[in-house]
Image (cartoon, rainbow, N blue to C red; front, side):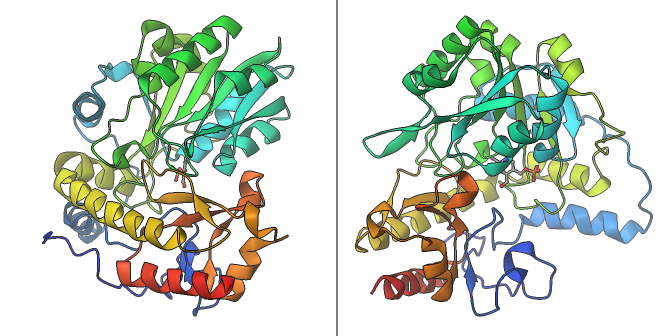
Length: 377
Ligand SMILES: Cc1ncc(COP(=O)(O)O)c(C=O)c1O
């Protein structure tokens, strides 16, 4: 048995939790991407120590913070980067939005995948640039961004591709040849890439996360990679992330507004991230084991429910479920009325789908799955 107890039910009511406050207390919330598990003990202890100090002035970057990121990225993703390629950011989402504005012209065209984490699409939309969505292709139940569909939307003004790996929703982990194809495409059409890799620490089945920027010199020069440990170690309410960009000019443009329009990272983000980098790996491996079991439970149950099907889930805890066969106008509402809150598919521009968050104790997931079955009955 793992020394970490992911089965523990922790009452999150009255803790100002977005996930738990949105719907009635009787509803099991399986929507926004945070986990119902405590953060690793090393993170809690580091934060407690800092809280107990009692003074929370403006922080400076902890000693060796960037060196530790360089080593972390090398150890986990076999990618050699340099400290000066790294820019610390308070959140990945803020960087998604600022990059669209800072790194493209008014007349530029942007490509986003579909479906994708809604902030990638909204960043393109709200930048007021023209944009198009490239639909993911499905092959043997696995979704991925294909050249065929990228070619359908690219045009002469295309300048930026938003990319998400591991993919949210669904958890596709891109293979090296797929990444190489995307790089060739971007090189041919002179696009740069904003690659959101926030779920990289939760790749399942001993597969490897390959940062797209790591696969070649061309890729490194065309890519801004966004990473954070806040998903993997469950402190999204604390935040902190980083951009990695080898291309100096692109990096400078992407950093515009940091410390003014975009606030600097905050003290607890540094504390939590430093602790997770230093001492969090054993917990992370235990988490992956638990998530794999939850995924198994999900697969077994979903397969018994007529009208629902789950795409291959290779990473993280955000499964993508097709309800196309149900032919319902609003599948989200059906399940909400039966006590389960999914993330509605319309947030990803696919209303006949739902996203499920399985990062919850097994007993809770089991209860949610029973309610889902009842709803269909
Ligand atoms: C793909 C992806 N990017 C970014 C975020 C949020 O990043 P942050 O909390 O650092 O703003 C999420 C959260 O769900 C996500 O799934």
